[in-house]
Image (cartoon, rainbow, N blue to C red; front, side, top):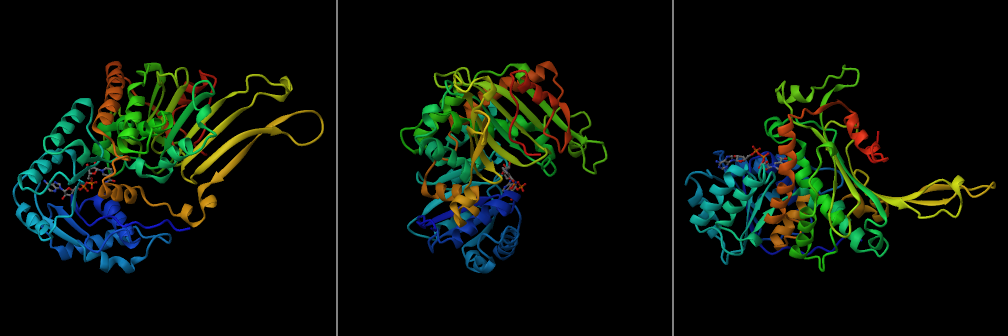
Length: 491
Ligand code: NAD
């Protein structure tokens, strides 16, 4: 059954950085799909604002090309593009100067009464302050306006706090939408549905029954196109501090009383604050090298970033603990890396063995295992122990109860909305549940900073790993030392 369409209220969306990569590849195509899906009322206006001195006609052409490049057989075709473009205009302006702000103000003032205004800062963080200040100075925002900011939100705790303070000078926390696009993914939201929509899992969801939890976000892509940024950031800042942290929060948090922005975010921030510092010997950093055999045509990490001495990690694995009543004693193993063997985001919950086997030694040891696949082939697999068929005693075997959402949900499961579609409608509706709060980001940096400072002080050099592998061998050792093994990257 197709989901019920509830259109959002009329809005004006100004995309600062509207000619940039993110706007063209993600934001505008997501707006187009929601427009075609009937989620937007007639009066919607989308205003691209950037430095380039181009006309609205030029901009519409650019947007049309950007949208066309993202169309596929599942979503809407190109037929709606002309209608969509009628809602799109362009203003050339500079965030650091007064040029262009009067024309923007004039365009926004054309519609009375003032609809919801969303200002999307799709620009580098250095422009957040100037934009917030000019919006205020030109009287373009009111208490109902929203601003949207992209990752990276800071480089460390100090810079994140400074960014929070910059935005807070002109906007209240309930007007600030900090994007972590992982939270917009259907399967990530499904973590909450699986945990809090079922009776089955929650009673077992604690250190008494869970042996350990693994979170893996593996990518096949390298860092090409983002070389300068990435070599300054590395996997810890680029992925662990935000995306993996968000997954960890959703998997480990206490049940919020309501699915409400502050109730959910209060619980998430408690998880982050309860994270233990990470011991140096529980961290493995890696950097991709030539493919095995050294014959691959692809560039190594250092060649890609053009820095032959770079000691930035393109892979990180670590073990941490959450010091609270629910999780004390259960290790969490997190890993993420680039140029690995497969693209795969997966959470593995490994339950403990049954306390006593009535079937004797020969039946072997068995434990349930819940695997939550976030991508690809979204779904869950629960391994269950049954009797191996046939005569000759009671031998046990683990079999999967396997569910792919695409199969279970039919057409709706095959074509989940892109993360940005969900996040954009939420920001227009004023729902901050899937956006990070300022204290959450700060807490994540407070945990991350000492880890980075530690390896910098030790002069740690990342371990090389082959492109197309599962990462450095030391990451396997991290597990093997505890008598465990990684699950999840499919060769
Ligand atoms: P980009 O370099 O492609 O585009 C930057 C945009 O900012 C351009 O439209 C440019 O005209 C505009 N701009 C620059 N200086 C300006 C000024 N002084 N006044 C007005 N406009 C100005 O960058 P991008 O890749 O689109 O990234 C934008 C933001 O989103 C960055 O903070 C980035 O870290 C973040 N982000 C990007 C991606 C991605 O996939 N591209 C993913 C996640 C986060």
